[in-house]
Image (cartoon, rainbow, N blue to C red):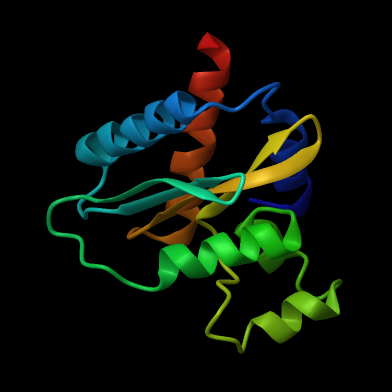
Length: 147
């Protein structure tokens, strides 16, 4: 995955109006994909307008700081956590975050963007970080296609 692809995902995967029901649908799609494709369980966290709307750990998944770290990375950067990894050398702030235990400079956090404004984050943790990112992107694409 390269910078242009991730930037395009953020420009394309935006909502006119994000609802909690959409968040649940995205989470259910992630869970179903993991059950079919992945050998390990994941955790999912969705926040919208400063409200936690979903925090779910699949059976066998233990609590870890990664979901919160990915959330903070998305909300503070205004971009996906994978974007911060790819642009780390160009944005000094992201480079500083790399050594912080508050941030996750890796894939697995994606912004909820409504009318070009970041209003929340969808985070997945438990697989390879690129796989976490892919699960979110595919699930958002599917929900936007039926919205």
